[in-house]
Image 1: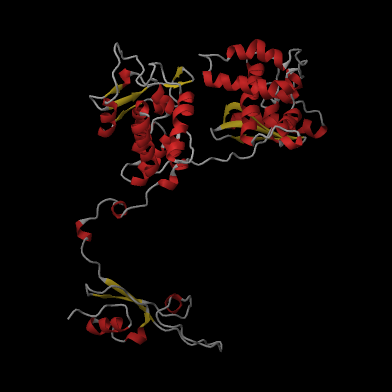
Image 2 (image 1 turned 180 degrees about the horizontal axis):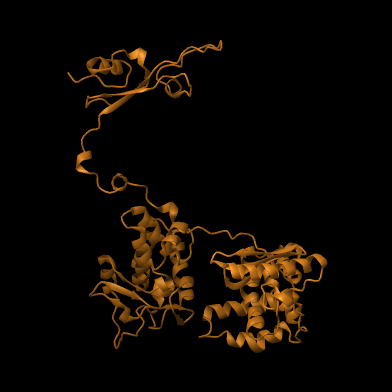
Length: 478
C-alpha cells in the first residue's frame, strides 16, 4: 500500500494510489517542475503513512476523485418503479424529433415484451448486476427450459441497448439513481455477419423479373443495384435531388417508417454521378402532373410515398421466389454493388467509399474477400516509374567461395556439396573470404554458388560453358 507521484502522458503530475486491493490515478493539474514535485512528494508520504496505519480516508484527500462514487453514501432508493418511470417520464420523451421513429418503436417493443414483465414492479434502485445476469439467462435459455430462446445479440440489444438507455436517463437526467449496474455485465465478442450479396447473374435475373412482371418498381430496383445507395436514402429521394440532365444524384436525407432523418453518417451526405444506363432507365418513369422539387421521386402506384416494409413483403420476396433465388434482405442490393465493383478491380477503394457514403475501413472490414487480386500493372506501379537508366538488362553475378579446411578436431571434414547454401554460407571461422565475379554476358540468366577450386579460371567463355553444363545457362543460339 503506497502513494507515489507519476507523470502522465501530457506532462502533468498525478498520484498513483494502491491500497486495500484497489488502484487509482488522480490528476493534479500541475506541471512536472522541481517545486511541484517536492510539494506532491511530501503529500504522498503522508498518504502512504495513513495507508500503513489504516487511517487513510479517500474522500478527505480526493473528494472529487475517480473513485469518489465508491465511498459516497448511497441515497435512499427512489420509490418510483421501473414501470412508472418508463410510462410517465422516459417513453414520452422518446418521440420524434428527439428519437427516430424506428428507434422509438424498438424501445417500446423491448420494454413491453421483455423488460417490464420482469422489472416493472421493482424500484429503479433494485436493479442490480445480479438481477441483470438472471435476466440475460432468462432471455437466452431455450424455451424447453423455461426461457425465451433468444440469441445473445438480441438479448444484448434488449439489455445493453434499450434497458441501459432508460436507466442512464434515470441516472444522468432525472438523478434518481447513482450507480450503473450495467457496467458489471460482460458480453461475449460480437459475431460479425458477413455481407451476403447477389451474384451478377442473380442480379440480372431479378432485374429482368421486375422489368417484365413488375415494371412500376423496375427503376427503383435498378437504381439500388447500380448505385449501392441505402434503401432509406432511395425511399427519401425527392425530385429535386435527381438531376437527369446533369447525370447526378444528391443524398441529403434517409426515410424510415415514414419519417425523414439525416443520413446514417456525415459521409453519407454526397452527390454522385450516375451511369448512362441508370439515367436511361430513370427517364422511362412516368412524370406525374403538378410535380415539385419536394415531391417524392419514387412512389407506389397510388402516388403515395413508398413503404419499405410493405414493398419488401409484397414485391421483393415475391421476386426472389419467382426467380428461384435464395432469400436475402433488400439491403443486399448495396452489398451486391460493392462486391461486384471490388471484383472488377477498376475503381479505387477510396473512390468507392466516397461514392457509397462510407469509409475505407468499413469496406476493408466487410468486403475484403471480394477485392481483386493484384494485377501486373498494379505490381509494376509499386514504387513509381522505373528510371530509364535501369531499363537495360542487369549483368549476372556468380558468387563463389573456397572450400573449408578439413576439421582439425578429427571430424569427418566432409566438404558440403557444391551448389548448396550450406556449402557457401556455412559459418566457419576457418573459411576463406568469398569472391564475387561478374559474367559480362547479357544472355546469362542466373548465378551458381561453387567453391572456387572447382571452377578454376572463372572468366570469359570457360565460365559460361561451366554454368551451361550445370543447367544454369541456356546454350548459345546457333
